[in-house]
Image (cartoon, rainbow, N blue to C red; front, side):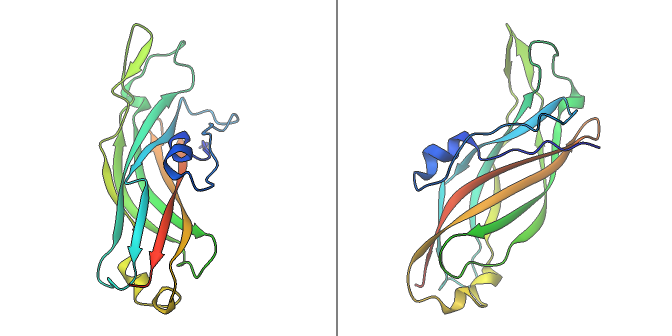
Length: 179
């Protein structure tokens, strides 16, 4: 099995505007025919009011399947990607919550080619949890007294139709407020 590891999604540089660096690139050593990228998060930043202790904070994600050699191959169902999990980790100043992983199913179609252009290779927008309600009820979040920003890095993992492992990461800003 091979892995395609990606960096920050280009959309995040525009969306975040708060120091997130950008550029997605596939792993050149991977033998997978496709790689995935984070097309967008909506909203592109998340406000987390830790006083709302029973509410998860969410965003919607759209993922894109990309052929490694679009001029040499045409997409097939073997190039469809199924994402089976995502992980969220935080960095930045302040008392950030611990990383977590959740199971999820997101189908990212390979798309079709017409006149040399690939289309229909984008997933439906899927809602995912960025800040868990359980994290708001425990330390360190339940002790915050001031608003602060952190970066959430979300990594998606899955396989293509050939069984090759694929992975993509994107980031967004989370603003934590005490009330």
